[in-house]
Length: 142
Image (spheres, rainbow, N blue to C red):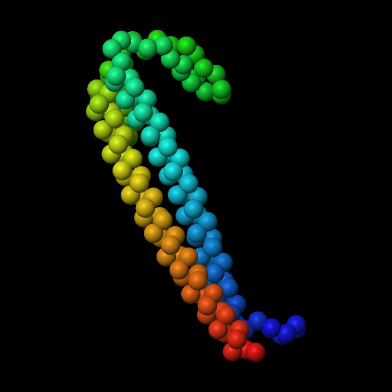
C-alpha cells in the first residue's frame, strides 16, 4: 500500500480478529504446557510407586519439606499409600490401586490436552483464512 493511504476498515477488522485469535492461541498453548507438566509429574509418581511395589521391605528416602529442604525418612510401609481422591478426601490404598488411579488421571489429562491441541489447530486454520482474505483485499486495493 502507498504511504499515507488509509487501511481499509475491512482489513482493520480482520487484523483485530487475527489479534484475538493470537491471544486465544497463546492462552491455549499455556494450558497445553501446564497439562504436559501434570502428565510428567504423574509419570514420575507412577514410576516411583511401581518401584515401591517391587520392594520387599521398607526403604530409606528423602522427603521434600519445601523451600529446597529435604529430610531423611524411613518408609516402613511401601505397599500402602495415601491418595487424595478429591474434595480433600484422602484414602489408604494398595500401591497397585494408586497406580491405577493415577493412570486414569493421566488419561483424563491426555484427553483434555488432545482437545486443546485440536482447538489450537482450528484457531491456526482460522488465522490462515483471515490472512488470505487480508491478502486478497490488499490486492484488490492496488
